Image 1 (cartoon, rainbow, N blue to C red):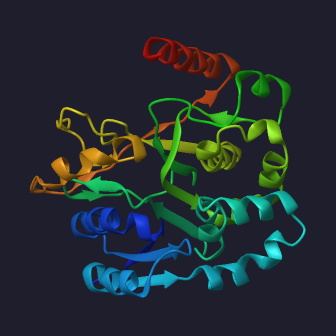
Image 2: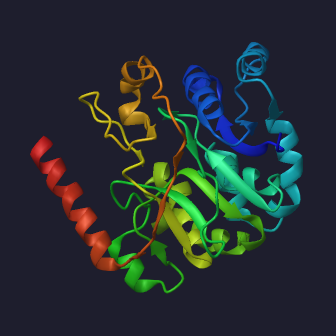
Length: 284
């Protein structure tokens, strides 16, 4: 039997029940053997840890205290990165997971439900590019005019950081320090970490998981015939029970495909901004 591939995820007490369902489906339906490295955001209880180990099997839990020690030298002379990690739990996904991953990070959010057997999810791009999930929009903490004004702010279109495959030798904490030190880029806290990953990804080259295979759930409770996994982000989390109630599709593993990531230019971001504005007006 081949050695298990370590997959990282970030987890806290509030996400425990979702994680048990979703990470359990990841382990059961992967054709390749996987093991979980879970980063505690500091809120897991002792009972939570016992349940994770009992229900998910081989789990390596990294406590917040252990992680603080590991990242201290990286943050010592980077005040913006240090402040972001102190104030935002998602920073552990951007910083801590990379530092303990070895040569390559394989990461999966704890709210992605797998529906059928699969293979190749954590395979790097053809030229060693980073791989991310595909979003429905350019969900970034950056404006269209920022893309025109700052030559360092180069992003791919529609990156979602629910799944990340990344060669850690390309990690650039100084680029992250630059991004996080500019208040004008931090107007959407929920998207800062995702924007930072997109920034790193464009530097190395990146691809996106085929959105027909790894997608977002439909409120109607229907999944496309090619869908392998669904990402239950916070606004869609209430839909998880109805999908989790279905028995997984059986059969041979589906090979996960990737598609090239194209650059997000100012016009692309402006179109996203216009759609958001129109949606707010219609809802208001």
